[in-house]
Image 1 (tube, helix red, strand yellow):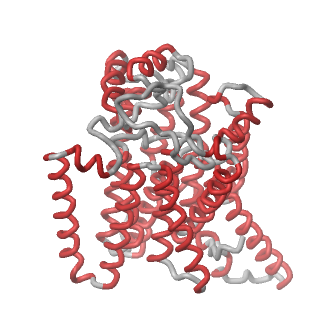
Image 2 (cartoon, rainbow, N blue to C red):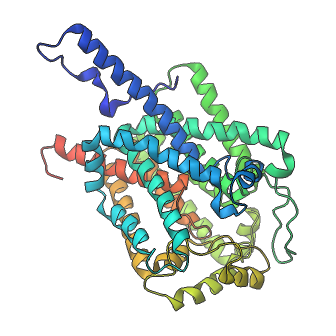
Length: 463
């Protein structure tokens, strides 16, 4: 792939030749390592596409999946094959570079414990087969995050994200042109009266407009990072990434995803803060205070007149009908408060609980539309405590990176962590299987931890 990846974590370029080894053997070994590096880049980009849920979840391919497998949208045969291939391609690299992979596992015990809790939830799940299947999907998500963090430097990870999302950007426009009725939301069968209809909103190569919006928000983060924190090889690379940034923003607007729009704006603020810190560090605190005042002003305006702020974002005080869902979800949580109903065991088409909630609110509910409520529903209070601990550790790692002068990874990571938790108010963003947002969240958490460890080792301290 002509992406300019350096593969610095496992590059043979800095190794000294071993005595007694011929030049031919050294050349062969170097050539093999370069081939593995290029294949690793291709595997990484494929994993990013799979973790987006791109293409296979689109109605265009979903119909084809139903003809060769089950017509149950929860058991998409194409998606199953893609996830399994994702795992099969990553595992050899994890085994080949097992020391790096074990190091990542050792330093992220809470993330591993969370995965173990999900598998244990099969025991008490109301749909154990579904929980097990989604546990495997979650393993592919965590493997992708650990694979990226252990095999690439942060600059190359952002390039991988850029390439993977670029494919979704291009094909989203192509799908709308070729399959408009499948790539654009049509009139819903539900009679919506109290909030907006999604008819006319773009979903591109995804199953829903909000998925398109959130993936493109991650694309905005990646492009801003590349444009502000990396050295571009040529003028044409600058043009390419500017076009991708514009494409991501355009798709967010066409999807009418208010949450994704807020995230994109937040990531832009993070990029501005990074550039200010890089070029005018002595004024960084002044600008930080200014942004804080602006943020508090917006918060006060929201508190005083929520209709005005939400109206500007295309929403309403009920968060487009979500508040009604939250009350019903809380009733279900209190029935199994400690361990929940099983990881991702809810929201199945035809399930009694799902049907009851959907009928009560007047639209088909696919999730709790709140990150912590979704976690509590599936894994109970035990799961909530574990997730909150992981989020807190991740944020603390990013803050420590900023404190030791690793501004690039620290500021962008902290910005992303804040964004995901803010969007978690209205969307189930945390601990989702096959979610590019959770892949990036977990990957940045691991990268920040590795950066801190590297800094402490260089200072002669123990981690």
